Image (cartoon, rainbow, N blue to C red):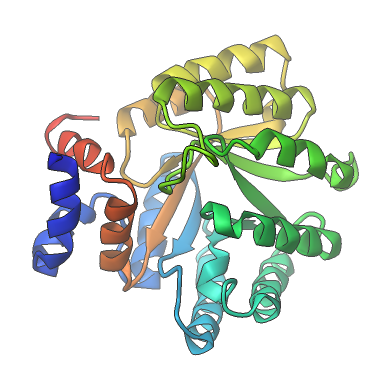
Length: 303
């Protein structure tokens, strides 16, 4: 009840007050601030993936603006020689308005990244977007086999089946590249596992499938139990270090992140930024009120 109350009232707080809590997890509003945050992570031996906030737009003018800004992001990050790649949400480019326009805009972004031999990660969103995003990924992967990847969410009941169905596009010459996370959107019991234990169980199941099939995977988690499970699977299947990396969100569990880096594993941090940080923060909290408890703990509990 307390979590839901916080989620409801937070959007009505002054933005300056909300920023006090949000700035730990968001790199800033500008490209320059995102570059600075990424550079500091690089100095610690950590790679990045940058994301412009602003999904679920309402018109295609916004989609075009997001596309143009992503092209600027790539130019800025490459000019600064940031060790990182790019993440984007298809709804930011009109996926639910006009999927063909969305495809063309994202294609332009992938072309720009490919000019620098770099990479674009297509984020997976809520269940109504999954089929559209799988279709989008297949089209992009066909044209840019080494420059585009996808995200999968372990809490969705369909995920393992989706992974299996995509193995037809995986080969030694054109390997697929995925990020595996738990999942953040509020989903129905029909579509998603609900309990912590179930989600973790299926995360490990999905991760094992990817590792034993030599699919490159970004192991995206802040859960120490899952990190330990990943260590065991990596050892069990003798996974080459060039077939996986760990991934975390900007500002979250820095002590666990350092432990993983100190063990010699590759780490990539997801760096969100943009003028829509307030909408992003309040939407995420409304979608998943349980986050309120984690936010409160993160303010007062180190690491």
